[in-house]
Every structure is written in C-alpha cells, then in structure tokens.
Amino acid sequence: MAGAAPDVGVVVLSQYDEPEYVLALLDAGSARRAYLLKESVSDPDRLAAAVRAVAGGGSLVDPKVVERLVAARGRGRSPLAWLTAREREVLEAMAGGMSNAAVAAKLRIGTRAVEKHINSIFAKLGLVEDDRTHRRVQAVLTFLSELG
Image (spheres, one colour):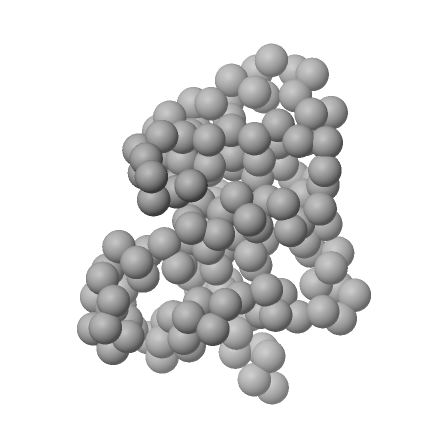
C-alpha cells in the first residue's frame, strides 16, 4: 500500500483498538498516516485535526490505541518484540549513537529506508510526537533498558 502512492495520506476510522491494526497501518512508516477510533471522532474538530496532520505529512494515533500499546508493554511483553529484525538492527545502531546516514551506510540501505524504519519503531513503541519528548532518545532508552 505505502509504496504505490507515497504522497497519498491515509486516515483510518476503525472500531478496533487492537494495536496490531494500527501497527499494520504504520508498518511502512508513519508519515501521512492516522488511525482514529470511530467512537473518538464524534467531535468534528478531532477528525479535522487528523486530516490536517496527515495533509502536512504528519501522523496521529488515537490515544486509546496508544494506551493499549502501553498496557501490553506493562503486562511483561516487551515492546521490542513487535520490531522486525531490520528495525532492531536500526535501533541498535541508533543506540550506538549513529546518525541516519551512518545507519544507512552500515546496513547498506538508503537513508529514506532508515527513516521509514525509525518511524515504524516509534509507532511500535508507542512513541507519539510532541514538544516535550525526544522520540529517538526514548526509543534508545527502551532498547538499552532491555539489555539490562
């Protein structure tokens, strides 16, 4: 889906708050993607905000779905378990302090592919974009905390 028309945004309205559905949507990256629960869009401003975010190249995930991701993490299942092998390689390289360009060179992939993997990592770890936190640092801390 994502490779066919990369500039087309997608806003999914779903009745399912299962993390697997949103992770499938964000598997190829989170840019221009939104996942909202139908019950949450009774406020037209909320839906309009999602459309504006996607139109601007951003992403939005319903807070209830993020809560489910966090709850799954709290039940002992590592959020890193949702990462693909390539995503784990990218995250490990990030934890080593590498830039996106250095990660791309090390893994012999393009920098755009690295960016897509990083966006997918953020989504799978439930790291939403805001002005108070740095998602890259949070992702690395999650990775390092699992190493013990």
